[in-house]
Amino acid sequence: MTAPEIILIVVAYLLGSVSTAIITCRLLGLPDPRTEGSCNPGATNVLRIGGKKAAAMTLAGDVLKGVLPVLAGRLAGFDAPVLALAAGAAFIGHLYPLFFGFRGGKGVATAFGALTTLMPLVGLALVATWLLMAKVFRISSLSALTAALLAPVFVWALEPQPAYLMLVGGTTLLLVWRHRSNIRNLLERKEGQIGR
Image (cartoon, rainbow, N blue to C red; front, side, top):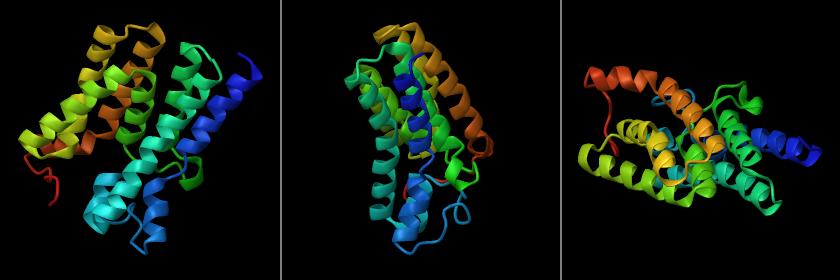
């Protein structure tokens, strides 16, 4: 691996470590999202505690954290394994941020930004899955989990690149792990609906 490729992966992790939810809440004078609502520093919890504007800012920032490293790597001409590592590094940075005591969010938006930049058709399939589930069930975590579980299938069907399949397989496992409290709530029929 070359020095520029290593730098890209390190920068991707550091960019992922910037918690958009915490920064947005500080800028808007809102409570720390790690101490309110679901205590998750992500867009859904920011929507609960701060409203649509704060949630939109958080969502946009989290998606960009996944988009920018992959886009930079693609423009630099790096190959698929390096792009996959950069995408994974941004995602891990969001889950375990260096700048915020390694207490991060669940990574759905950052993973989506990275995967959509890597594989636009897969990104469209993930959006369609999330929107359909959200429309029918109005539960963000269920929508995210369904999209995550189907992601490897979409990659296998639409862009069966080994590096991308490995990335998506690992991402799916981590997303399910990070949503374990949501899974418990879903099984107990206690999970909150979008907008409530």
